[in-house]
Length: 111
Length: 111
Image (cartoon, rainbow over the protein chains, first blue to last red):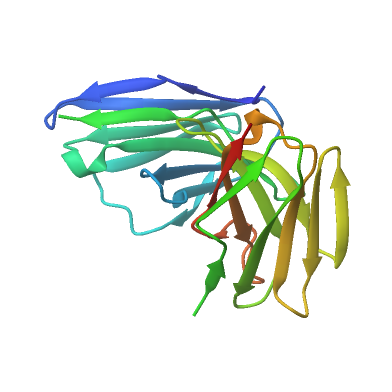
């Protein structure tokens, strides 16, 4: 069982909605990630937080807004998304060995 | 450029052995990871190699040759539940967080 938990598992939202994805890890890891994955493609890095500070932003559109309230929590705020943003959103964390462990993902559909 | 190659699809028989190859050309090397991803689920970590040689973990083994830019994942005593995509990923030398991903190998197990 994964120690990275994500909610909700499934989300359907309209293009004018504001919603958030939430992630929590219980492994004491200091780095947390958001990835996006489309069907039959590998995960695509969006953001990395290291010690609660944004370390990497892979030129993600501003309609995606990450937030790291503390070392165990990571949120992804969504606003004015497009249908092409529909995908599996994966939260992950890594510790001293830098092995990345993924949560179960949140399936997002934008209508 | 940075590139990781792995076969798109492989088929094997239940109870047999299969080897999934991965070749990489990256800007430096700081570790190679294998992940398993069942359809509709998140990737799960299988193995990590940073030094040359074989790492064994139950029915799964992973091999690395840094001089050849080559790795393989060996799955023994195949079970139907091993039907999944297997993703090879390399961490470049200049990053603690980013991974270069292969496109994944879809493994089909037949009875």
